[in-house]
Structure formats: C-alpha cells, structure tokens
Image 1 (cartoon, one colour):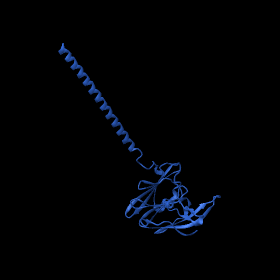
Image 2 (tube, helix red, strand yellow):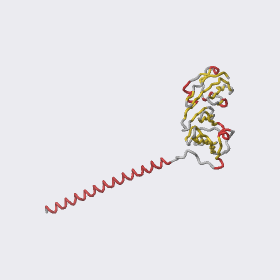
Image 3 (cartoon, helix red, strand yellow):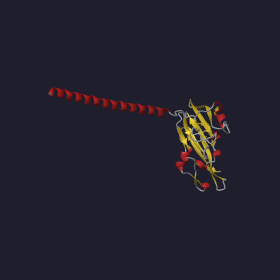
Image 4 (cartoon, one colour):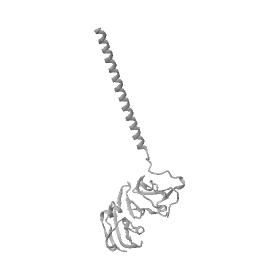
Length: 236
C-alpha cells in the first residue's frame, strides 16, 4: 500500500510540473508575439510619409533656370498643387536643388525646399519667393505672409543668415517712424536692392487709414559667412 501511495504522489507531482511548464511556455510565446507586433508597428510608422513632396501631375510641374523662375508673375496652375524646379544653382562647385511647391488650397506641403529640406513653410504666391547668388551664397527673398525676409544658405545648405531672426534680436528703432522697432513686418517688401557684398531695404508702417508711411533705408554688409547688423543709411 505504501508503495502504491508513493507512486500516486509521484504521478501527481509530475502532472503539476508538466502543467507548470505548459503555463510558462504559453506566457513566453505570448510575450514574444507582443514584441514582434510592436516592432512591426514601429517599422510601419517610420515608413509613413517619408517623401516631403506631394504628388503633382506632369502638367503642373515646371523646370526653370534661376532667371526664368524669378520672372514668373503668378502660379502657372490652379486648383491644387503646382511644382517649380529651379535648376542651374551652383555654389563653390556644388549643385543645389531648389523646389517651390505652391497650392491655392492651403496644402500642408507647400513651401520652399533646398536640397529636399523644407526651409519656408508658407507660399502665398510663387512670385513671392525670389532667389539669387551673391558671394557664392544662395539668397532667398521671401515676401509671403505679409512679411519680408532674407534667408542665406551655403553650398552645404547650411543656413548662414536669417534677417527676421536678426531684427528680432537686434531691437533696432527707426527714428523716422517714431522709434518703431523694425521687424520683418515693417519692411517694404519691394524695396530690397542686392549688390555683390551688401543689400539694402526700406522700412514702412501702415497707418489707421491703411496708408503706407515710409521710414528709413538700412544696409547689411556681408563677406564670407559674416553679416553685419543692419545699419541706418538714410531717410527714405
């Protein structure tokens, strides 16, 4: 009898061990399955929307050199996105790609792209972005959003200068405009004049009758990667 009881106890122990092993194995399989699902979800998320450009028809995609693009006086397509590839930009032996994406339906991918990197987020009209090369640097005149700004990039598309940021930091008061602090919103957008080593711009404010009151002329000098603080030149 004692031998039979011992055998029965041994059988029960073995059953409990087998059940325990099955439970542990099930838990391990479920955990591995969750990890695989999470990895797949992460991989899928990383692949979403890797192309910064919207899909645009061939009819609304245009290739221009720098002078041809700067001569555009309005969008060449309406009813959605249009794309303007600006070719022939070479800085210190490196070719730079510039693309302007415009949409009259407020598309979220509209903007200016330099070497596939978005550097301006708003385009009211393609004619509000102009480009030029001075001192082996790419200058961008951005007149969108009721402002006027200058962005400058080198051959590696590193941003060297941002007039809007410079004015925000400098806190320059215009004596002609009752000491108004000049900013990207107080620049006359069509007043920029570019030379080999400097550019000038004029200030203005809009009064209560929506009339433009002109202020002063300021000049920024540049050499290599250095840009001077905007300097007062004269009254307008």
